[in-house]
Length: 116
Image 1 (cartoon, helix red, strand yellow):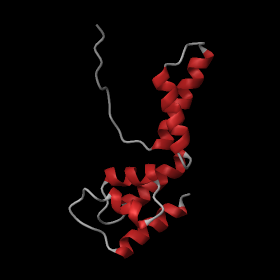
Image 2 (cartoon, rainbow, N blue to C red):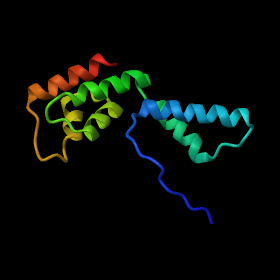
Image 3 (cartoon, rainbow, N blue to C red):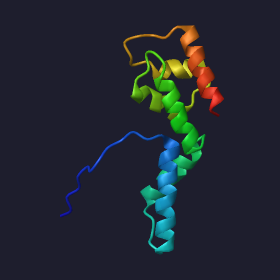
Image 4 (cartoon, rainbow, N blue to C red):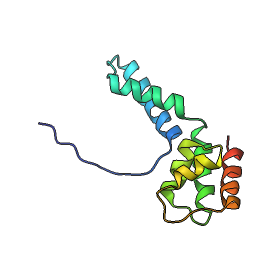
């Protein structure tokens, strides 16, 4: 029986995940190993949803975290989803105990659109 444990944990954006998955894929292709269905689907998912390069996505997270009322989890969620409307942004903040003013929503959307 194999015992698996978490060695380390860190938050990453979807474009960073895509980069890591593509690196693993190239290693498996070079070693002529078969890729599992789940692995192929993960790569497919990351390719479809990653909208920016990893460097830009990380810069967006850093810039979003400078804002007031911005938690790291929300900054990563915004970076992964890249909302374009106030309604999409409100859906991200739906579980929070506070609401954002239209001006705050617009400032977040301006930051997001500047990183497309």
